[in-house]
Image (tube, rainbow, N blue to C red; front, top):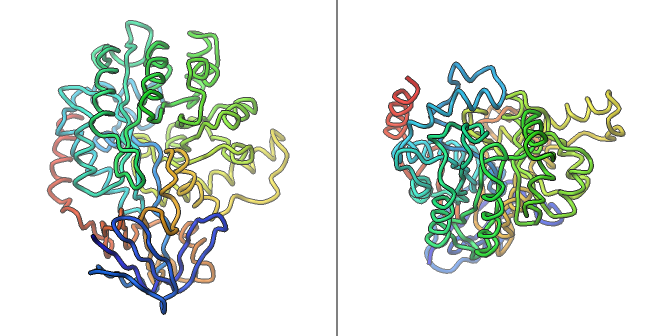
Length: 461
């Protein structure tokens, strides 16, 4: 039995149904689950406990990253991919990614996870869809176990290469029988659906332009047989829409829904180019979205209409996306970016008379909602994203006495989003302190970063 007591919390942002924000409280976490939330004079915890004094801190539920490609930390800001759209960006980077091996995937996952943890993210998905030179999804799972992150790895795949009309080079695609065999192996070996699970596996064919219709159908069948979630990129660019119309005679969402990707066990990344009927279909079928604002701006893909999605009842989470299309993985900064981009999108829609004017701007608290409870819904979790008794003991804390927040104490919750994003001070995952005083506690990253940079230099050169 292990206890953690976080005491003297200045403000606790619960994200419960009432969106309660509590002052001067304590949290008791036992074996990874919140056992008690009480005022500072009413504290009871049996057995030995580790204690955190969070005086002057504001505490939030751990942020939840719903879309990432951690291997891409190896190829940030590659010159040939800096100023092009998605398809040319991919064509530039595919050959470089083809030089990865298991050690590269493992090192990149450690770097990606460390960056997320330091920014307040406690749970993350990852979409690894190529496996050159013996790399496996196990390499990322080992990294998550060692660094202490709650992890949702997805077994991605590409099966249609250039010679068959797809985008990726033929040497990076796999046989579909091999993909399905390895997907089954990973689910049976690792997936844990219990409350408080630290690891849940999903299945994630890469995109309409890199996998076959048959693989989409077979993947859906396997996922539902095992009760795991399904994920893919969708409606990210106009090039993708053109590809789907020319190859399948359908727009992207219609195409994949006809293949069985049409239920509440699905979440799509991006959904930038979607119309009102698409949004209605997402809402009606309970399909969630991973909104990736920085990546969509970086590649010039467009702006996902998340305000209209949320109004229709679509579950929207936030994703930092790959570190070669975002070039960073700071989750709190991504929450801020989502808020700012939503405000810009509202202004542009009003000017263009695409939709009726929005009567108020997207708020900091709404941005925090999609980064917590929205992310939990996208990943199919009911035990994370909120700080309540019976939920997982995942949170991050910010010392509001730091210079970055000076002058913002009239509303510290909003200030955490509005003010320029910096690394957080404390992160707890599953009741264990992973970051303290702004420093990762589970491993020293100096040697990891050196090895990571050496691998990156060898790949890019």
